[in-house]
Length: 158
Image (spheres, rainbow, N blue to C red):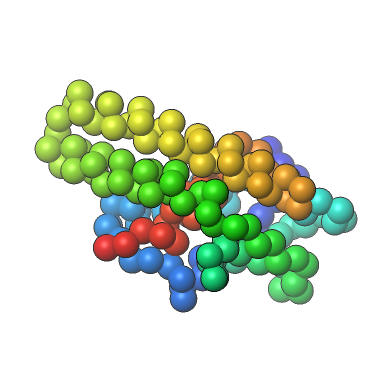
């Protein structure tokens, strides 16, 4: 587990860019935030350490990671082009919707197939996030997975 100097202590999504989607996906988003705050590894490259607070949003085709210190002083704004993520976000959201429908139908074989596909896309998005953030922010794969869920929440449409 991360020390207090290598972790996030608060995560918020920019309400101005947060999409409102299905209640199932909003539940996944809430679980991702809770899990992220319980266990994460997050360090700004070249910084003396946290703990950190993160506001995640999007603006003009870019993902925004606004990172501040424990007393709200801004430390760094990381902007990532959204384009490399668009396909995997779109596919992940579409597969989540099918998965949620399969869960309502209680079709075990369909649920299992959708869950496997969803997990694969989730891992692909997390690896891409790890790679893109690496020069500026160091995170582990579990943190990347949870952050990818939150990035998808920014783009989920009802």
